[in-house]
Length: 77
View (cartoon, rainbow, N blue to C red):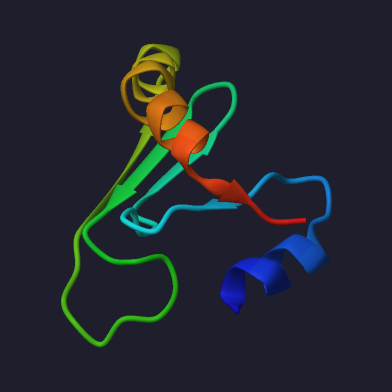
């Protein structure tokens, strides 16, 4: 599983899996938000992505998306 491999390589990061949410957003504190139409990993399709470097965008994503989904997700160790 890619998430477990990533966690083994970077043990200080937090990764949680949600049964109905695939990886299309990455939040990097304090001010980076990465949004993509692709799952993070390999894709054979044409995909679109955008990276935002904004404290406002980061805080909004944490409040409106991350906190709600994290509570329903299962963190891997």
